[in-house]
Image (cartoon, rainbow, N blue to C red):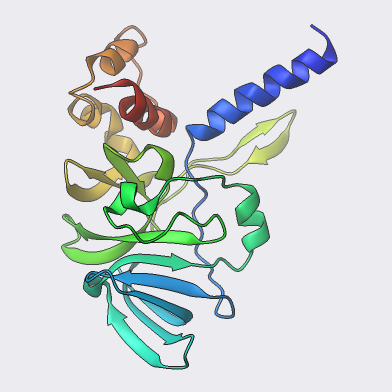
Length: 231
């Protein structure tokens, strides 16, 4: 195989793999760049962020100033969608290419996902007993299972090559929305919950029976397979 063909193969393989991976979670947001939110009555507000309030690591309250100079405060149960600009938007944009429309994700007809913004959606978190805004990580394959960032998640150890670290660890927990309910899922329980999570997709479950090991790292790829290959 020539170097040119090898490069093309590697690029295609990497592109396919990226489609099945999660967006990188972002926790630092700019107060100088424009954000927006969509209220539960579908009203859109363009604004500049002043402050976010958290409960158990999740956004429950927002303070901001509209582009017209009006200050406001709003609880998460009044916000359907929150879109915030990261402090390092150039780096974030280079990692995201999503054309998924918001109406497909949230049943609104407001906008398309902007790769310069970080998107949060209102969810009632069952085990936390709180309504909060959760950061979406799998916009391109979230029809059946939605994966949200857990800001309090611990991380696994990072990988490496030739003695050099090339990647950080992955989160040991996420918030998953399954069958309309959102709760925290943990790495340590994934093998026990695997069959229940994907019970309507026997082809996915059968793939793992011969290996007898279920890897937490495969969660995004499993959700992708479930979303795109299973009826």
